[in-house]
Structure formats: structure tokens, C-alpha cells
Amino acid sequence: MAEGLFRQLVHGREYRVISAGISAADGQFPSENAVLATAELGVDITSIRSNRLTEETVRNSDFIFGMTGAHIDVLTHCFPEASARAYRLLDFDSSLAEYKKDISDPIGGSLDTYRFCRDQIKSSMDSILQFVHNTPQPSSTPVQVKIALGSDHAGFELKQCILKHLQDRNIELEDCGTDSTESVDYPDFAGKVGQKVGDGEVDLGILCCKTGVGMSIAANKIKGVRAALVFNEEMAALAHQHNDANIICIGSSMVTAESAIRIVDTFLTTSFQGGRHQRRLDKLVEPQNQSRGDLENTDAEIE
Image (cartoon, rainbow, N blue to C red; front, top):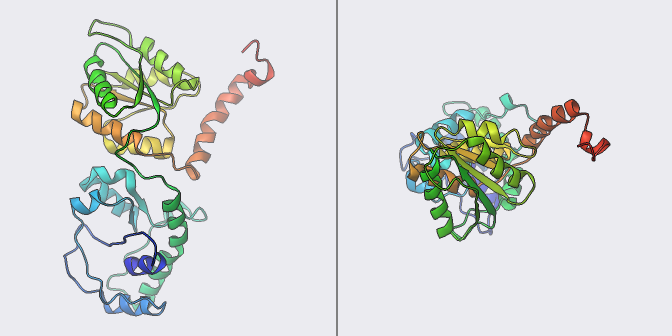
């Protein structure tokens, strides 16, 4: 039903719409009640057949929408690379509480059950199209940002691998050290990168140490920094999408160099979603201002 409804909505536009399921079998016909429910809206789905979700489908999809949070969880477990592009159909309806944003599967239900599911899907489509239209797509072209990198001795070799990868992509970089595997203190380099991000000298930061924990603690003490400790691509995507992280911290003992590069690429090709996430970020700032008495605004000289 979702495929048919979306196809009707984007008819004549440059969108390709397909439906697929992780446990679906290829080539099955739509159920009688699904056909009847969509036909009532002038949509004919009799020619649509089921598809099994494959790695190729995920790789070639710009956006993936599921009916429930459980669908998204299974999807991202089976295909971690999809985490940056996966959403629930009703995620964009701000009038709904989180627990109301799942659309129940109508399979085996009555025609009225299918109608209810159809109407939930249809109610999501305008906001989804607006989101799709306004979201810039990842590209193989160089990311237009300036990035500061830093590490301690334990993260030095990983930093150098990431540095070379980003140089190959022609991304503007600033290496804040360290410059060898000789023992150093991680707060010094977290401070250098964090200050550049907080002051707006660079757009984003990447920090490496043995676990990433020390770097994340140190960087988050700097005003304007939102440093996220990440272990995989899904965490990197969500750190940017939900938390608007401007620094990622990676542990050299936690991930391989190849995985770290995928983490960095995912972080750079996702963007902050705003909306309900902005409201939550605002609440992170308010307690800081209250505890400081907003000294910067009341007495900038003392600040």
C-alpha cells in the first residue's frame, strides 16, 4: 500500500519508490484487502509485487522508511550502513507522542484494519516529501568543511590514517597533533581541537585516543563543543542527526582503521535533523546559563 500511495503522490517527479521487507519473499501478490483499501483512493496496486530487502537495495536508497521502531532496529542491525537513512513513517508528525508513531502491520486483518493503516501512511506523506526535498544528499564530491584533528600517543597512528583519507578527499584540515607515539596527555590535544571548534575556526573535529573516552570528557568541557564517543557508523550518523555533534571521538583499541574511516565518512555525510532534537539540545544549554548567571552577557569583561 505504501509503495502505491507514494508512487501516486510523486508521479511525474524524479523519484523512484520501491517497497521491500527483510523477511519478505520475492514476487508475492498484494492481499485482497490491500487492493481494495488503496482502490478506494484511486490507486491500483495489483501490479506491485513483494521484494526481499537486499544489500543492493539498501545501498541504492537515499531514504528508507519503516512502519515501526522495531522495523528500523532490525533494519539497522542487518544493514548498519542504513542507519543514517532510516526513519519511521510517522517520525515527522510532531503532533504525535513517540509511542504513537508506530503503524501496526495490517496483515491478516479486516478491510477496516487495512483502511486505518492506509490512512496512517497517507497522513505521513506530505511531511516526508518535504523532508526528502529539503535534505541534501550525500555525495562522492569533497565535503565543504574545515576539520581539526587531534590525538594522544595511543591514537596517533589512527589519526594519521584518517588524516590521509581526508587529504585524499581534498578536505581542508588542521592537524593539532600529537606528532609521534611519544607519551603525551590527551587533555592538551582535546583542548586544542575543542577550542578551534568552539571558537568557530573549524567546522568539525575528530579526536583519537586509546578508547576515545578521555578525549570526549576533555572536549566536552569546552564551551560550544558537543563531542560524541562513537564505535560504529550508526552511532556516528545519530550523533550528527540527533545530537548535532561537532566532534567525534574514536578509540584506536576499539575499532580498526578501516572502520574508523567509514565512521568518519558517515559523520560527514549526515546532517542535523532539527525539530524535536533542537528542543532537546536547547535544554542542554539552559542549565549551563543558569549556573553561570549568564556572565558573558551581564559582564563580558569578567567573563
